[in-house]
Picture (spheres, rainbow over the protein chains, first blue to last red):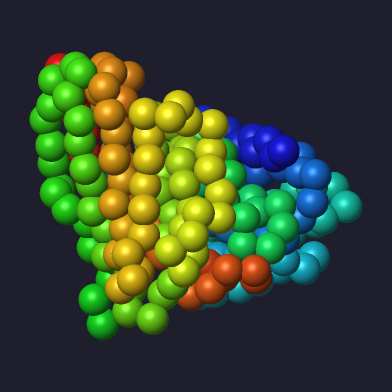
Length: 110
Length: 114
């Protein structure tokens, strides 16, 4: 099975950098995903890591350490529109279904 | 290109009733997964279908069932509705099965059971 843990809430200031951590425990491993979900909307895909290291995509970056069962999502130059829930999800093997954490609700303040 | 579509958008049912939710995947995607998301929680996996065959089932009672059609669209059925079934039901499609393809979510169906 899998267990995904992430903080429940975070607050950061507009223009700043925020790091959202995620730890996972899995019987196998085939990818760690990050999704953004605005209130009342569907999750949208942000990033995918399967190898150790940092994946950068514009203002968003995601990091993975398989040996530590650890990932983080880094958001730079925060904007008010970045206020949303950020979901960490793991996949154990193949195309098995994603197991989601409860999400981290990020509030960006002026 | 059209994304994943779901219908209806919102639905209100009473306890004991039955409901059918529908999903059309992105063109070319053969795998469809269903998730239930209760307010304040992450999505919980219900079913995965690939090429009309069930590939996985989450920890949900037999009141939940699904199927996938030859055009890869899918239906989720829930019988004998309970108050606790009130949630956002998400459908996600992906290209294939067997490798870690990213999943694209539809807008969801908000089900309220009274």
